[in-house]
Length: 463
Image 1: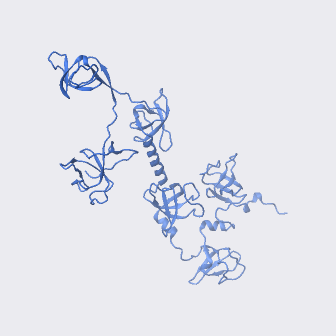
Image 2: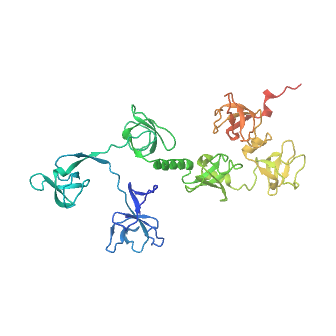
Image 3: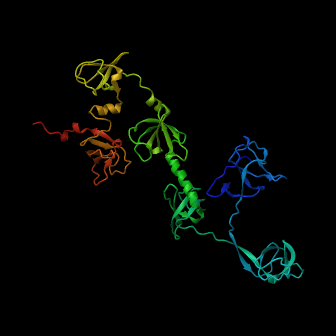
């Protein structure tokens, strides 16, 4: 047998449902051993567990190595673990009658003068008619008659298991009444109604299903529940990124990200962090530089093709691009004339090897050096056309709610007017007619419909 995969709870180790406990003694056949010797050959794994097949004449345990061969643990460091006996589920009732072969008896009125047994001893009968007159029995531990008046027969009665109730933990093993819990899951009992099925329980993810029957459950431990809870939380944190992948950051300011500000919208590579990490996922940019740690709900999963298109170098401008004149401070523009100012927005009309020709509204064409221009995305161009940065809302703007992740009373799809903001949190107050308080909406969760400057209903009539 090759190395064993074990589950390690608080105190013992477990192999295929059988618990083992570390002991300070020589190894015996049926024990398992943990290798604690870094110098073992490649076909034995340091830190792995193996079953002891037998013990040789020198007292050295023999195991089966990774290649399927027998390996002698002589001169190898290891720890010994023995099987943990399951607690007895049987109790016994005393009955005063003649015992039969194979039954257990308890001595209650010892008469022996040879000190072979004493009151309280429990023995197994191997001969129910020692003298041929039915008056005595013998046991397998010694050849001596025990009279009937010296013992009582122990009749086994199975112990009734403790009934589950509120606060107990249980494992779902069956579905006898069409419940909606996953078989094999560990749950916490939250309701015990003997007149009904009778249990309801909380799953590791905090959800509560419908009714469970007693036959659907067996006892479990809080440690098992917490272990499953940790697995559930980590699976949720990893989300679609179990194999890594590519993503766009959609909420860098959430509690699920370890950094704040300035990287919403950034395209990143995603890898899964070890379970000890602060967050489940690690993000890197196209140059391999660390960006942030986060969980899956701070990201939007994208394809490799979308990532490569979004992050490929922008080496030149194209006709029709929207650009902003961005001459570095302290530097004069190399070309151009007229009243064009730094920060003005224009459209690329022509591209040559030495310059980019830009049409600025109301101005002659501007011949610019490529280093003097900043390429705007479609979203940036839309906002720049009204003289604002992306998602820079103003009081009086008409907007539509496109998402709601902060518990706002504003419903997705509704329209409203920006009345206040931005707040310290970055959110704006939007009146959609929902009434009451709690109508703060994040700028990334609303779409501009009509800028305040373009609303006819709020403009004063000309005199």
